[in-house]
Length: 275
Image 1 (cartoon, rainbow, N blue to C red):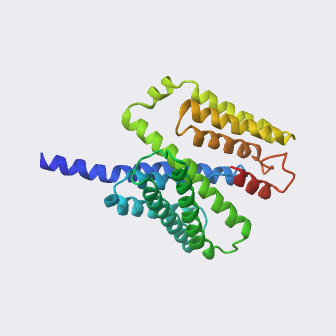
Image 2 (image 1 turned 90 degrees about the vertical axis):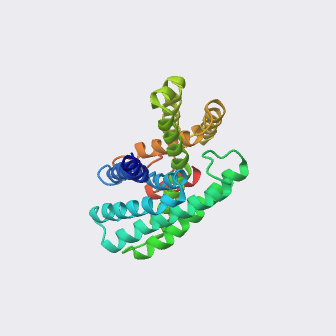
Image 3 (image 1 turned 120 degrees about the horizontal axis):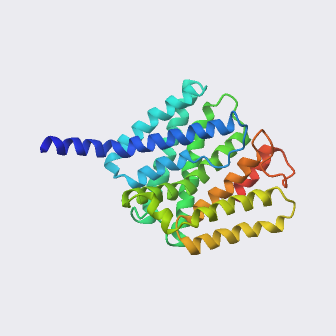
């Protein structure tokens, strides 16, 4: 009996880290494929939200385990992707440090581990935590880059901020669904929600390919509707749906938004700032 209990505790200790590693790896490889082979503009770096979500959902006593696993995996993946060992290690350390800062400040702002912010001050505090953590991560990672430039620094910073602000509540929400029961229960209860997300992405895709900028408030109206109708984390999912449209537009090296008459990389930064 005691041996079985030890095994169960050992598995619980590693389960969150292993699951986070799998999710992070899948998202990272997908992002590499989008930016590499498909030459698409990526607005949101969702892997940044994975580790913050894990730290928010894990007792501090298990943080070293999760951080160690993610540090090794990230450094290995970055090195295998073609970067030098120094750059890979610096990028992995930067990701871990920014996640610890964001999670620690976020827990302090929320006065605990409540997963969904309820007040304006909490939302603003979480956003400020993401800004602080990602700024520190950028300062750690970019000095080791062979040719650091302002565009890459700005894109990396904004993509990580959006990944944490959008991804963290979404991953925590999915985690709560899996712990409560099959995710199909939620899909059956809110069977129209996926349709709303698809319509949001489609509307954003159409509006970004048209000239009239006055149609942009339609997207904000959709976010408000989702927040009122479905609650958290519907706004984050709607913003994520908005971010997918420019990525689809940019496949093949094209501009993410034809209505923005600028270079693709400049248009990407404009859309990131808008999100």
